[in-house]
Length: 104
Image 1 (tube, helix red, strand yellow):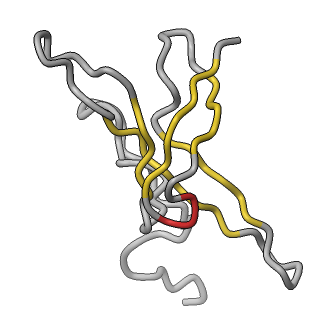
Image 2: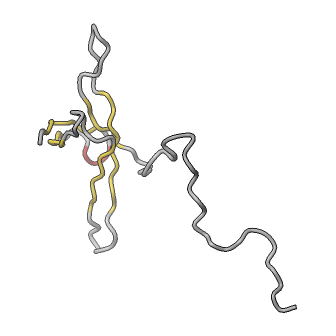
Image 3: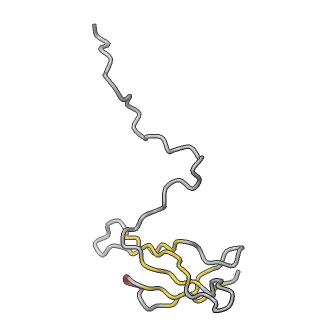
């Protein structure tokens, strides 16, 4: 598999360059998550970096590379991918509305 040295900006990884595996399209993943173990043995903290264009070509305007920018919010996604897709159902199984009086 091919990899590309990709710079990281912002957050704890600021200024570092890591080799990142490229996908079948030749691009690195849109998000890069780095789990950082907690010193007290608790759940790990996950650092989230988003892929952004590094530079544009002068003549063509095409992206000439990628870099990762720190996302302090750590969002997992942007919501629904397609506007016509089904919304995610509420995970709560209790009915919304007035409770039925089963005793009488």
